[in-house]
Image 1: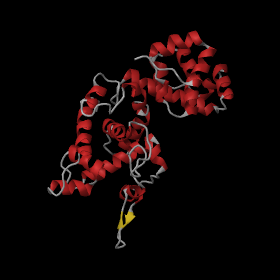
Image 2: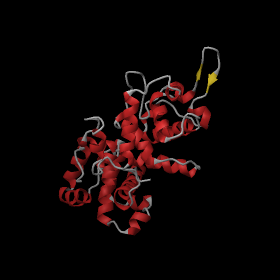
Image 3: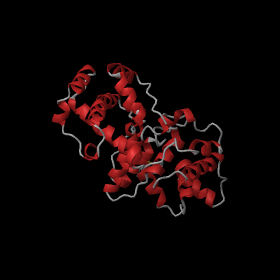
Image 4: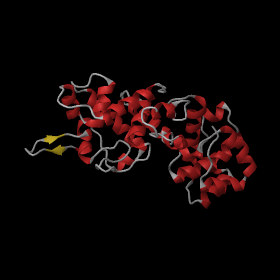
Length: 291
């Protein structure tokens, strides 16, 4: 699928070298909208010139040039100065560009909403749930999720990028907001779930931070990488419950709460349609999981 180059900064950069950009960026199908941070996006745009000018040999993919070499490029320096970027921003943008390139072109490490049939399989369950015009947004934070998973697994965790991404898409369509019930961010959570709470009898119930030795804040819930880590730890905690014997149970607990899952299993409550559909959405997405 051709990249949608609609960003104002990209338009300005295209004017600098329109023919070169059209030939190399469009043909290589790089999705610039997958990079959320404006400064990094600008750094990436500048770095594209170097990357494509030098070439895409295995050497350049496997060994990043040092900052001195980047600083030798007049085009990069000019771009950085015009957009008030440091040379570190340009270097970091170049790194992100290569990481994005590797994920998209070298080895697929996470499912994509652009996979054939993905949108349709979800919308069979609930028409209009996902929008094929928003695939770039659904895939926008792949790099952040993969970074979080790599960091978690380096610590001995068993994080699953596809599962985390599926939850983020189902919860927010990758557009994190505060909903009418007060749940926030990519995970759709609340402060007491993060930091614990005290009941009417004065007993403290630990949150994710207390259970796992983390230091998440509510602000982190609007950061895709931090949110991915949070979702992993939250799901890990749910798995330990005696009421969770399957992934479906875990997803119901995530969506409806552990107390409600227990009552449903004890036949004290009926499973709401929202939770029924949540499980169906996840199972439809599972067909596209890479890992």
